[in-house]
Amino acid sequence: MSGWQGPVLVTGTDTEVGKTVVTAAIAAAAQAAGLRVAVIKPGQTGTATGDPGDVDSVTRLAAPSTGRTLASYPDPLAPLAAARVAQLEPLELYTAVDAIREEAEKHDLVLVEGAGGLLVPMGLRPSGEPWTVADLAVSLGTPAVVVARAGLGTLNHTALTLEALERRGVPAGVVIGAWPAEPELVHWTNLTDLVPNLLGAVPMGAGALDPGVFRRSAPGWLTPDLYGVLDDWRAWAEEIS
Image (cartoon, rainbow, N blue to C red; front, side, top):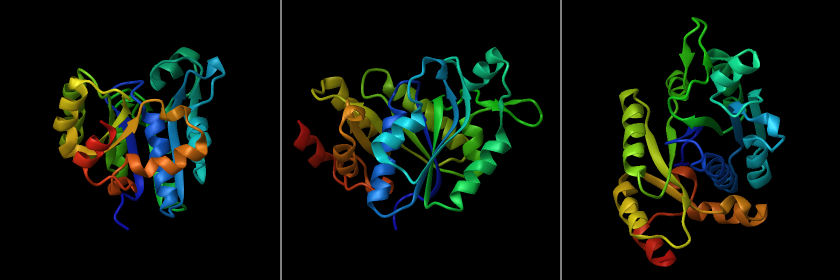
């Protein structure tokens, strides 16, 4: 099977770029290809609002075999800051590593959805030093999916994230988290520049689709590395333009 397997980090160039919907799309495509999929959220913040968490959203859209949140905090902050403000225990790096490895023994693909961008403080190491999802990827030896915006500013943010991953020896590709229904010049030029690293493009508003429609559509948004069928960006661009 040609797609990525084992633990795979899903991170982003920033917050609110579409990580959760992209995670759901990868989970749906992989399950359609016959894989057993787990989704893990190491640190969920903002739970005081009562809104569904990211794992809940992925479960609704993609129904992975397993969904787990390792630590939850009430305030909508970076996980380490949220733990501090709420006077709760921060997530320890190797607790997260062990939980992910445990699921990797029982599943073909374990999608690990980060919080915000690559270097957001997630919790503490045994030494008391903060750790990030970049550290988690290095500890696990995982590749990373970088979810990026389609519009202005994305090339710099994406390049910085990819460079940080490359410096750590983490293989990575890019998925556009919300491709607009009516793309403008900036979106097309960004697409051209991102294509060498591009693993997919999820349409804007995909998270609001009926779950059945979402699951049937997801493979068309992703390349074979992520269990999709998108193999020609030129044909894709002509089809949606």
